[in-house]
Image (cartoon, rainbow, N blue to C red):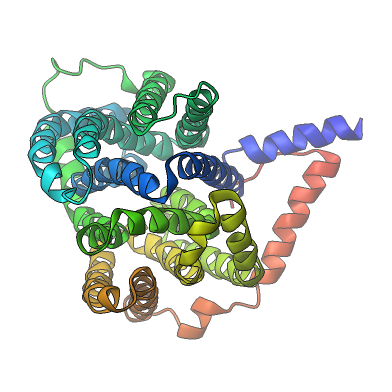
Length: 462
């Protein structure tokens, strides 16, 4: 009987729509996604070697970069406007975004076709050709995935949102294992698997949101009021997201420009392995923004601040011992040749935690309709980091890139804390310490434990 009650309670915890349930769901999904991504990375690293891994990572890199550059803040604007206004307009916001992105995809395809031979000049011609076709096919799919994910987040359909994120790496791993088992694993077929996976998942996601997307996509007139709201807020956050994309991807651009395909293969492994420390913080950022948007300012700052402090405390406690475990696993799973990037891995692990914490704090600015403050922060950090890339990379290679990123994450944290203090009058000490945090965490964990042992209602959403 108690086992049955525990199963019911666990289902309520992980399927509920409250804030804590959503964070549990998204954190669990993040960990699964990272595990699956790691499995696919292990397979491709073992089968292709360091240089082959670099080539395959370069093929996957360009669609992700280009999609981030042409998002125009529309996914974030969809979330913000649906939470601020009537939800019956949710389909209109997605429709307007889709119609706007159609010509954008055509332009990106043309630019990529002619640009990739120059951008990948150090790679073999067959890698360039695969990258051309993969980029043209994948960019539209990734854009639609971002829009549907934003719709799911705004309607608090986190099961769909997390399903999108989980199924893509799951099917990727499954496809790679099939190719490996058949002895057919190659860079070309691996890229094909990744495209088919993304296309299949976006089709499922559209079906899962079919009730919200019922309208005449090309026949209805454009709702000017909705368009003004969508593109108005999108233009505000686009600068922030563009700088964020450049900040997170510029390190790869520098490696492709200044270093070798082998260096790109090494870096793609250690960077991905270091991102496992960001699972909880990324989940909090993704959940808190749609949850707190529209709430009073005091409540937003209190919720975001507590999420920041607790997550930073937990991650700093576990980072030291797990870094050494991660380094051991890197040699065991990927191969001893990847261990030459161990120092970069240590630095990137610390950078990941500091950067993830600053993004949690930044969600308060977006939720309060002040994304310009985040853009200023990103611009300052990007300027510092890019300048350090050109100084440190020729001196220390991959370690120099990692050090530049670490300094950039510290700058982001400092600027964010300063903005919180100046704009919202939050005391400096209160941002990093609140004596109520541990009692709060203890109380929430006890509630979860009681629901597991006794059964009970789902998360209330506090």
